[in-house]
Length: 158
Image (cartoon, rainbow, N blue to C red):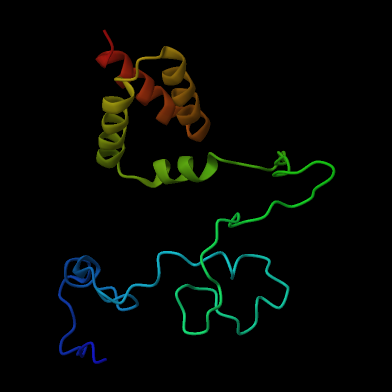
């Protein structure tokens, strides 16, 4: 089935406006979407024969895979502990240095806008503990950053 033809006849002047906002989705043209149900046949960690060439949809011309009231997925017999394993915290984990480095390379006008935007939203939080915890994160990134956010929030709070 012919879908169409894509021709690049000029270099975009504004890449974001001309290309990224075009919402062109070549892998799924309208009306040719994949099935909404994949029947769980090809899942993560599949290592058996996977039903080989048997049909896994219904109706089909071979009379296979007829609709049934049986459970779609069968439970697994497990022993021991299951579930996600606990995440290890490491002393070298650092969630704040990149944010601080970004703040320090910003021009002063950009820093002011950033602080005012954050304070505008953060000052509307109803719980003081949330505000204090957030400010502590900004302080960990950069002391000046945290101080300025705290001052801006304090000016806005009743």
